[in-house]
Length: 266
Image 1 (cartoon, helix red, strand yellow):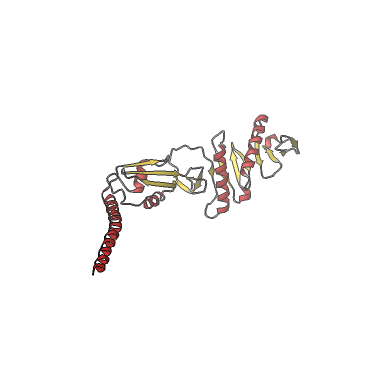
Image 2: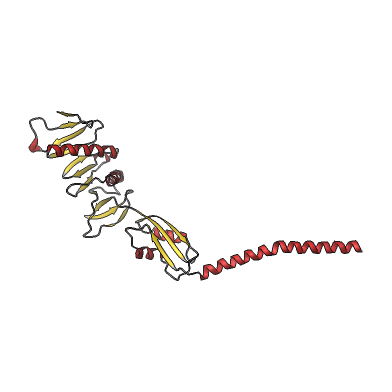
């Protein structure tokens, strides 16, 4: 009888010990869940901050995310806010952070216009991936290359080459002394630049090297005060400069300029 009572007491002690070990953590978890639920339901937005936007105004970004002060901080997920921001062609990427203080921090990375695309006689800003950002506002002045007479849908390969060339021009800050830089061509091999009313046959690829050679030959043309019909950069080891017709002397209509600085007339 005494042994049975001892066993009963031991079982009771073990049961109490088990309850002491399990119940407090369960209560803590329940309190955390309840607190988070109340925070989501009751914690308001006290501040909305935007970082990184240069083209889009804060008001435009606010309209995109569709949240305002005093709205529920966790009423809309960060992913939903991100997807709303991506609806703008100007937004390349974004990071959304919510703080328990009620602050919503939105850090955006905007696309950078590198050229103007002329479609149906209307200018559109495009980035270095060829994405159309928006129609250029009337009266705005931007010193950007202009892509003309290239259909981005029907002539995708040529358009891609033209966009890559425009990106290199933008990065290298290649500008016209008279303010106009045009890119055109019906095939990638026929890509042409027009700078200072001079036609420059560029062709496909190697744009960095070709533009380095162009800087050299433009300096030579200025030194000689030449009027030029076209410059051909499509050859690896030479630059062909065709003087304007009024400067032709007999058969000396083409001058071949080697990039190492040596010059040879044909």
